[in-house]
Image 1 (cartoon, each protein chain N blue to C red):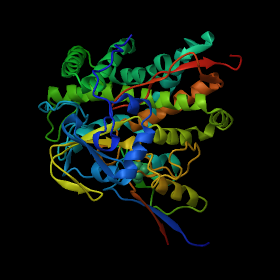
Image 2 (tube, chains in turn green, red):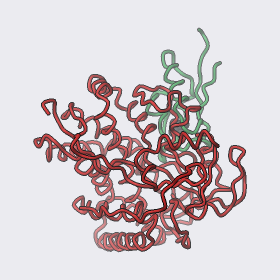
Image 3 (cartoon, chains in turn purple, green):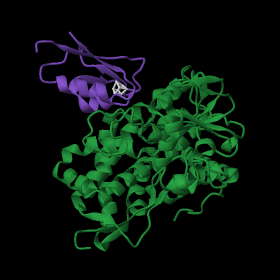
Image 4 (spheres, helix red, strand yellow):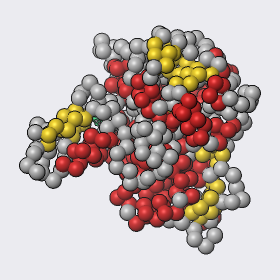
Length: 69
Length: 406
Ligand code: SF4
């Protein structure tokens, strides 16, 4: 499996539930209001794929995309 | 002690699908089969009670309504027997609609981020252990009255900078607003007035002696135009923080302990694998979500294909959504290592609970500290478990026997 994953938070949908940050702290950052954005360019380092999917399936607002590149 | 009197009775429900009532004793006792029956009938059901009220029964229908601020207003957030004039700044931002909602909410978000909660955690652990010290030697305890109740009260008192020793006062106001107030307007108004007077005194005191708590934070906050908030806004938000912070988390911690008392396998697993506690907390939040909010239909529309008419209330049952088997496989089972869990216990959309990070931290700490010191406990067969009525659901009496020997 050589494909690379990238996470993306839709800022219009995110309501700051912070589930992504709790489940995948390496992949997400929160702003001063607790709303999330992807860390850096959102590219998921090898080994953290599972956490990316986990964050996606636990976001109550369905605000997280995991893109297979 | 708090006022334990119960609200006046409604006629008992005989037809749940067309005449439901979330204050009926049967619902209070065990709502789960009722939701199942309603969900099997329609994604949205209606009752003539409460001057007309809908209830979405599926996750999808709840989600649709929570995200639709055009047809559904948050100016009323509790389904009650009466609909008095809406007070201005009742409890912003929860009672606000767009566009005034966003600035009011943004004001409250920074003090409740996960990082801010981390700083509070040591104090919470100390509170939990002080409470346990108070009863652990007795071999039995009402865990609702002596443990789960005081954790959120003391946390929010700490954040607001008001005396933790006034806890019983706060608990009584909240009982009057969220339970008795559904059917008795005077109780609600009395509690709101007493709360406002209480906070006014604290505001006055801070004018001469500023502090670094949430009351001072709101007093110093500026609106979009750079002006200080109106006093009614400050008071409304303070009332919200006190009301929203207590009953809800009290209920969530109590339901979790109730589950663990009855489910030794889950309890033993959490003791053996404490790292699983955060995941288990999410599942307990899903399965026993305490909070049901409300909306008012302000414009006719359809929800999941069902027509809804203006002038009705909506019982926005996040707990029922969280039991929808279409969204959650084995929705009626508590699976403490459930991996996919988009539960809606803290609401969905712009009105997501501002205190969700606080509640999660309190639940985790409350369970961790309890399980560390009291690994063995079960329901006391000589006692009775009772549940609160209406807007927030949780155990109000939770008699436990502690320790293996019992
Ligand atoms: S879990 Fe979803 S809603 Fe919550 S902060 Fe992350 S992206 Fe935003």
